[in-house]
Length: 410
Image 1 (cartoon, helix red, strand yellow):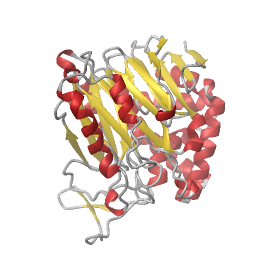
Image 2 (cartoon, rainbow, N blue to C red):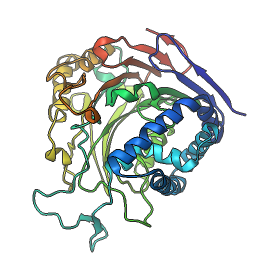
Image 3 (cartoon, rainbow, N blue to C red):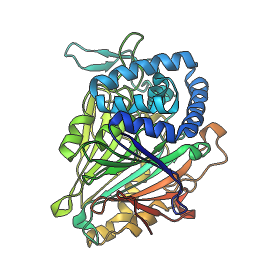
């Protein structure tokens, strides 16, 4: 039996949807509890799919059916959740799957990726300096984010900390929410997401958490007509958050093919300060980074030596310094093992290169369609199973806290 509640708290900048039951029951409760927000968010994206990707609603629905099949094949529990969302929100399932594949649909296009004689992938027809590029860079427009993780060995209270700024279109701020699910196994997941979508930054009751950055490379793109697409990256995020340990999470996010590039900063609380790892997932390949000096940072460009063309090279932007600056800001406290939540908050309020800074503000010189700012900033204490969230830009707001039992605090 499903249990669903929508809660609005004065100390949290977004509504909280809390559901309980099987994946299908959680999805139905979520869809019903956030129905109006989901319809508004879908309307936003149907316009964006048309204006930015040239896809009408029929084409979007067709793509959604392909993503539905891929999700059912590789992540059946997430598929049950998404089917439930559609039922509760009274929408066609294929539109909910398309909504959860909004990155693939907006930034993808029919891919020029072929298969070489060894079974790998290659970009056909590319010459030096002519990489296939998405319509817009993850940092040139609206996709920039900065993520940080610090091992408990280098924090003042010994807790593993994660955090990130989520930079996106400010006109979509009102369709974002916190989703808390407790499934039939007893696993609780708390995630910040967009209405109708099932994950982004978050944590679970096993002490596992994830932050996310958009990436771009020359392998990104939708498959040719008639070819099943890969798993949407927001489905991968949900699958990671439903894992009960870090090793399992690393298995599920590598499962299946992908059509877009994504960075996941994953961590889990444990003895000796817990563990952190950063995954750069591109179509057909994966790179990874381990903590150096007790912490990891990431922005919107590739930092591993994957054999792909990073499309940030076509656009440039603040990503090229944000990760390095975050490391430099953390270094003094990390060196003496005293990093705290306040240090991460200060980092996320940094204004170097304003307005295209870690704490991003709208640059009024840019076209309206490329307006971007930090819409929300998130801090996560994986040992205490608690999440702090500030409306963006975070320099103007305080963090409200919520733990997985539903308790709130400063």
